[in-house]
Amino acid sequence: MNLSDRSAARLTWAFFALGLAISLFMVARSQVGGDQLNLLARGWLLADDGRWISYGNPMSTGGKAPGGITSLLVGLPLMVWRDHRAPTLVILLCHVLAYLILDRTLRRVFGPRERVLFAVLYWLNPWRMYFSAFLWNPNYLFLAGAVHLWACWTQRERARFLPSFVLGAGLLLAFQIHASFLLLAVSSVLLWWRRYFKPHWTGGFLGAGLAALPLIPWALDLMRQPAILTEADKGFLGRGLVYVFPLLRGLGYWFRYSSLAVSEKVLRFDFGDFLDPDAGARLGEGVSDATSALLPITLLLPLLANLWRWRKRLRRLPPEASDRTWLKGYVLWTFLAAIGVFALSPTTIMMWQALIVLHAAVLPLVLWTGVLARSRHAVRVSRGLWIYAAAEIALLLLIPLGSTHYRCAGHDGSDSFGLDLRHDHRMLHELHIHATCPLPVNRPGGWWPDVLPE
Image (cartoon, rainbow, N blue to C red; front, side, top):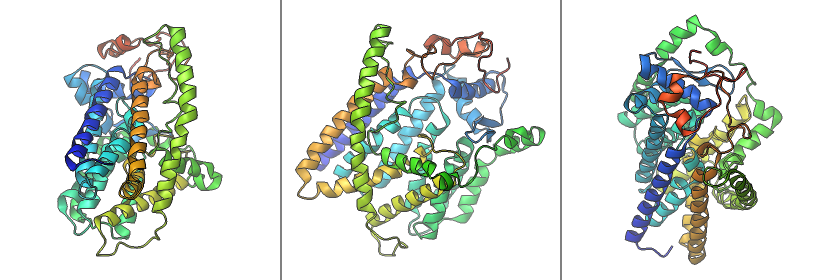
């Protein structure tokens, strides 16, 4: 990239501003489905009458997520603004903080031009953008991933109390939000074993202990309602090794996270909110077919980047290792931790279950492209980056106009996002859910949030 340091810095912040503006537009258009209603019901009960539900949403393996942290994350914003989008602004704030932490940490390794690459491949990443602006448990965890990298980086030479305290607290809070915290927990063990960071054990245990306080009401409720946990009996450990496909699916997401090959659900467009319903559906189908056919081509880039990284043999980090060598090792051991978790997972890995390590998944492509940009291929890399960024931005503009979680059109039963409710409820009106996209109510045999009184 033929950019001066000042121009590269300006371009980095221009990409940040663009991504933030698109995310705010997506927040305004975010929709409410079953998972969102389950979370909103917990927050609304806390904001409306002070009732704190001590457990989270139903998990893929059955049972309920331990701890009441989700009730706080949703309920506290609702005390300030009674709208279903209030907690979503907290999610967007988590994404902003995650990027700022990562950018500040990685600028010690990256030059100004690689910061531009990171802004394009992480901040404007369509996977991250899609999950930045609607309410869901995994969407909070980008911040936990960023904190993990920062805490390990700052302790690569010596143990420090504050980073270990924050890391311990982050892991325990992530545990209460989504089971994918295991990806960070296992990678922490491997990185410590291979001497990539030196934890301050007192700080780590104190942080974990403080973050575990919301588990106390959960433990008390568990003694009264064992079904909160005993229902968690789906699948079995090692399923990925036995059936292989779940493991390969998880690995596929590692590569896809640093490409434009987003999920088919993201590319299920319908522009009926802005056009005639029939015309909007037909246009959406055409755009879906085109993007589904073309975007997987970009998978070639992360595949090549990861192959480039894996040429190096595994070893402990030597004392004289450079910052760049440390970062490459961080990526590699995080990847190996992901393989272990995917192999042992009792369920098939879904697209959201590894988002917590998306920051690590995009780094091989940033590092590899940065090397090419300093070689005789610099001109071609620069042109390719602009083409990639243009395609990425075009996709990001399509998502809030017609993608599943950001449109009302097609959610009337013709789309899997549709939801029939057994009853109407005051919460649906107070949080402007009906005003955003009316949900069908008073349907016999319909669905209902698990904690909301009928």
